[in-house]
Image 1 (cartoon, protein in one colour):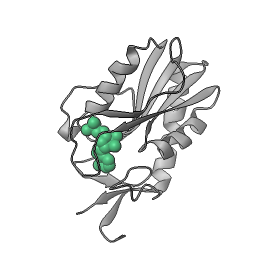
Image 2 (cartoon, protein in one colour; image 1 turned 90 degrees about the vertical axis):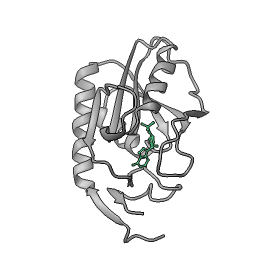
Image 3 (cartoon, protein in one colour; image 1 turned 30 degrees about the vertical axis):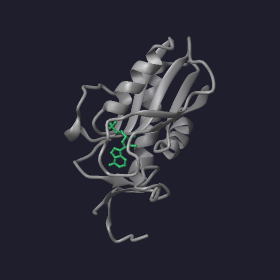
Image 4 (cartoon, protein in one colour; image 1 turned 60 degrees about the vertical axis):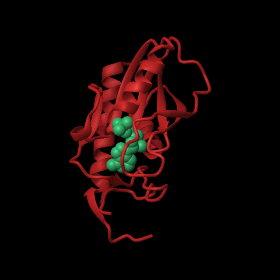
Amino acid sequence: MVRNKLDVLIPEDRIQARVRELGAEIRATLGDVPITCICVLKGSFIFMADLVRAIGGDVRCEFLGVSSYHGGTKSTGVVRITQDLRSPIEGRHCLVVEDIIDTGLTLHYLYRMLQMRSPATLHTCTLLDKPVHREVEFKCDFVGFQIPDEFVVGYGLDLGEYYRNLPYIAVYHP
Ligand code: IMP
């Protein structure tokens, strides 16, 4: 794997500080209720692991397998559910945890799909927001960082399944 194509965009300490802030914001907004955090796989698994610890209180973890890129650096716009939730979310306070919003198609689709399952409340959180390529309007409730029009990897985000284990977010230069 060639590492010199990567430039650090958000270092580890800034990510960790922001995740702690997001956790506190989420808990303050939702109040003292059990929160079902829905991790959108695979890109959000590292963010989710840190975020649930930052939220504190009663938290349940659920995992939703989604594939929208199929290994490239451009969105196909096709959202495929590869693994559904294991339990019903009806009547539960839910938080969708996403790694990045690019076109907005994935989160828009997931939001409508989950809303049909009658949760008590449904909020969304993304670590990164790349607003340049937005194709559908989507107002995410909790956003970690806005980033420029670059393909990024690390902290769970991949290119062809690599780089997820980097502790920072880096720009990938092809
Ligand atoms: P959207 O449907 O275009 O908003 O894309 C959302 C999904 O595309 C994310 O969950 C990521 O899996 C993937 N994605 C978008 N931009 C990037 C990027 O810069 N790096 C890695 N994955 C990305």
